[in-house]
Image (cartoon, rainbow, N blue to C red):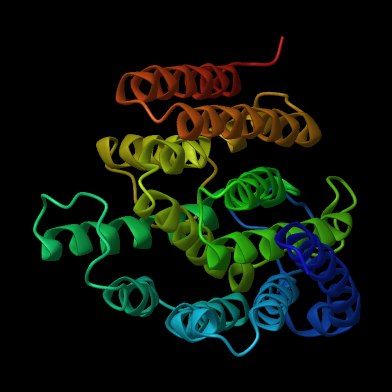
Length: 334
């Protein structure tokens, strides 16, 4: 079977598998995993959470079946094991909240297991000492896992981010800019998120991802982006998640400067402020989806041109687009 057909099979299988498993799990989630409104919530009534179980299960199972008993699958075992563990941590936290420090430590162990098992000959910046780059990757990976969780605060938000990013990664893989394993994981994750989306429609959401979904999604997405950077496409790897990076990082810095307890639930992300400022949820996630499509296009141009000068221009364009959207969200809707 050709690479294109394999990727399509992976995408469709993950979408169908996730949709079926989500439907099967919903009665159980309604009984044991209700998300009750809090300071961070955008929903008004208790809603089942935990559909991330279906998203992650579909992603891992379909990817495993596609790779078969190959050396590529063996190389993914640390990533898959860390994904399962971090999903379990999220599931426990969904049902009975874990204190901040133990939760953070467990997440760090999972991210560390992935980073420290990378081949020693793989570096993004070869001139840096390996220990320094791996330390930076550990910190960055831990932040990325949490920012995906922070941004999962509106119906369809994670799909609006995850589907364009994973689709771009899959296309880059088909064009030879990304190796097979991250390409297949991206295709499976994108399909799974699409299979989850009908159950999470804004205004009529029947179920949420929960931490059991958002945390491992962050780990898998972060790993795929890292693989893109290791292939020499650092600018593309920065452009793809730029909206999430900007919204979360700027919000964190703003809360720290104001000496607010940034580790507690809040509604001060730009996308949350947008709904408070009169933007309908569908419009917010629609605009996030569109900026992600634009960022994916810029990332593709970066890979095609392979020019340092062009990368600077493309990053500036991507940054300007994201900044314009953040400023729009921060103002009252006209």
